[in-house]
Amino acid sequence: MKRVVITGAGTINALGHSVPATLEAMREGRCGIGELEFRDVDRLAIRIGGQVRGFEAEGRFNRQQMSLYDRFTQFTLTAAKEAISQSGLQFHGDLAARTGVVLGTAGGGVSTWDDNYRSVYEDGKNRVHPFVVPKLMNNAAASHVSMDHNLKGPSFTVSTACASSNHAMALAFQMVRSGAAPAMITGGSESMLCFGGVKAWEGLRVMSRDACRPFSANRNGMVQGEGAGIFVFEDYEHARARGAEILCEVAGFAMTSDAADIVMPSKQGASRAMAGALADARIAPDEVGYINAHGTGTAANDKTECAAVADVFGPHADNLMISSTKSMHGHLIGGTGAVELLACIMALRDGVIAPTIGYEEPDPECALDVVPNEAREARVDVALSNAFAFGGLNAVLALRRI
Amino acid sequence: MNISDRVVAIIAEQAMLDPSDVTPDSTLEDLGIDSLGLVESIFAIEEEFDITIPFNANEPNASDFDISSVQAIIDGIHQLVSQKA
Image 1 (cartoon, rainbow over the protein chains, first blue to last red):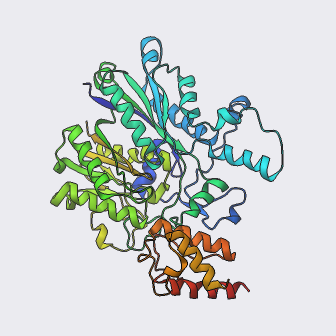
Image 2: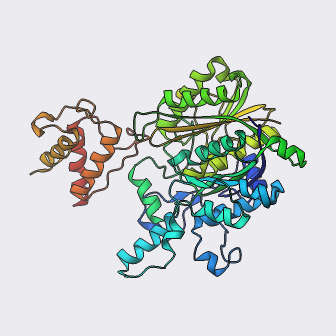
C-alpha cells in the first residue's frame, strides 16, 4: 500500500477563479451567492445562486474548442491547468501511460441540453449543431483533461449526485494507494445554473430564496453553485523523490449506501461513512480537528449530519470544528466535494478554518462548533470531508496534515 | 366536482386510498403521506387549480398555507382560488 498525497490543486467557483483567490475569500468569510443572471431567470421562483462571474470562455479557448466545451468542461480544464501546473508534473512515457483522470459530475453538460432543447422545442428548429452529443456527455470533461495533458491511464466519470466528486476522489485515491497509478487527476465540476437546471431544483421545494444558512435555526434551504475543483493525487514516494510541494495526505475514505430513501438522508448511512473513513485511515476519532460538512442548509441534512457526527465522535464532537462552506460558494452538486476539499487543505496546511457564514440563530439540533461567520486559526492534524447524496449514497474522505 | 372534492381526490390518489377514506380531520401523516408525497400533492393541486402555493419543505409551518389537516388544506386552496379570481 502506497501513501497518497495531494501535490496540486485548482479551482474556479463563485468565490474565485483560482485556489489562492478562493482560500482568501473563505478566510474572509465572503459570500459568492447573488442574483442569478441568465436567459428567462424572470420565470424562476428561485433567483439566487453561486454563479461564476467574469469568466469569459473567449480568449481562453479557440473557436473549435468552444464548439466542443460545455461550461462544465471549461471549468474543469481551467482548474486542471492550475492543479497540474502547481504539481510540476509533466506527463511523458511511463508516467503518462499510467496516470488517468477520474472526475465527478451530476449533470454533465446541462446547459448544452438546455440550449438545444430550447432550440428544437421552443424555436421549432429541426437541426442542431453536430457536436451536441460530445459536448454534453458526462465524461467530456475527463476526456478533454486526458487529451490536454497526455494522460493515458484509467479515466472515467463518476455520477452520484451530490457525492460525485467525493466518490471520484475516493476511486482515484484507491488507484494510487494500490500502486495501479503513480498519480491521478481527480475532483469534479458542475454547471447547472441555467433555466432548466434551476427550474428542476425549484420543483423539489428545498431551495432558499434568500441565502444558504447551514446549521442556523432559521435556515430555509439550499442554494446552488457552479464551478470545478481539480487535484493531483500522487504516490508519496514519487512526490518526495522529485521534491514536490505536498499540500496534505489523503489518508482514507469510505462509501456507504443508506438503502432507505431517494431524497431523505439517513443518520446511520452518514455515521457509517465517517466511521468507515476513520477506520480505513487508521485514525482515532479524537484526532479529528475539523470536518467540512455536507451542510446543505436544508432542514433534513443539517440535523441528520449533526446527529451522525455526535454518534461517531461521542464527547469529542464538542471539541471538533465543523463548517459548511456552501454558505459562501453554494452547493456545486457533483462538483461540491472537490471545491470543499480546499477548505480541508486550508485547515491542515495553513491552520485556518473556513467559517459557516450566514449563521444567525443557534439550533439545538445542530449544537456543534460550526465556526460561525468568521474564520478561525487552529492547528488541525486530521480533517474529514463529508458528502451525502440524493439516493442515499455517502462518501467521506479523511485527510492528514503532512 | 367542487374544490373540496377535487382536493380530496388528489390526496386520495397520492395516499392510494379511496376518497371516502380521506376525512376532513385526517392529517397527511394519518394517510401515510410522507414529505416527498406532500411535495407531489402540492404540485398536483397547483396544476389542478392553476395556483401557486407558498410552500418550502424546509419550513413547512413557516408560510400562511396550513397543511395540518385535509380541511386546513382545502380552506387554504379556497382562499388561493378566490384570490386568483
